[in-house]
Length: 402
Image (tube, rainbow, N blue to C red; front, side, top):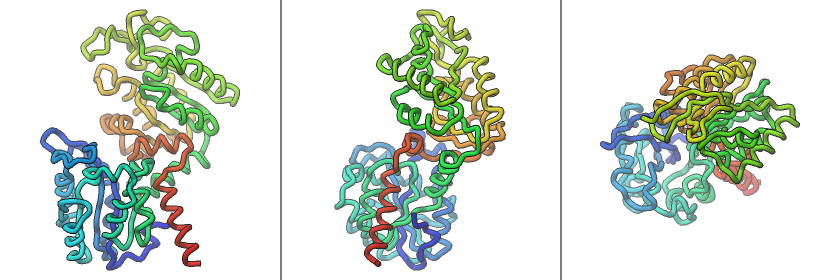
């Protein structure tokens, strides 16, 4: 992909697609601005090179309608503070009013367009909508890794209409780190896969069988794997239709010489409730009316030992019902084990990211990905539609120039 760094942008109108889908409280106060800070290098580069800076993003799920609580206005205020510059807030993301504002901008000016998803055409990858966005710029920059697995107008169709389409620093960084971990990793390579469903991680699990040396499984998805080995797991959440599939993955791992680790104990509860009675039991002794909601201390210790010789670690998904404090211990223990390892560590997925920050270990992780779905798509071995669009754009322009 062509990079913004290899592109002449001085005096040009540069439209940068970012992911400012930040969490807010009920008063629209931003509670975590990590995603804003992640793209600052690209934004500052554009400003330092005398560009007219136009920024576009989505926020939340307004479902194609104007919903005031999903306005990007609070983001404009935070961005202004971080850039130490005035940020103009546009009333829309396309249309005559926006075009007029852009036409009056000077180099060094910063404009934040209103929420892309106020328009249903964005998520439909609509060509007409993409053309209107492209009309605003001389150079389009994709720096929104977190939405690059989606075929949305602002990351895919727009590349057909923008005069020039390139990648931003964050997008490149995400892809480079993933390439280091998968294409040419230092070994042993350990994949930690957690979360609630085998079905949501099935593609990743099957693809990673071609790459990893060890698997560590946690979260409710571990229950389905345990069930496939003949364990009785009480009323723990499982996916009945995937028990055989889970068993086949364990078998394939063994055939490929991959170590496959499952929980040996669990924190169980009498009901799915943070105030329920809890206890820690060996996996073989889960009471018939109880459910496993977190890995136990013996499992945490085992997993820590498994990571001792790791040179590369990829982690996606929590070890238990992390959102409930009573069942967050296993995930926090895993954060500590990953952070204290001597491996290159890559963490991806919203819940996993939250866990790392909650444990105060973010500075001890080599790289924390900004995209859950995009990260998972890469784990599945699939191309990202937005990246394909950028590469196709480059090929088409080279053909035209040739």
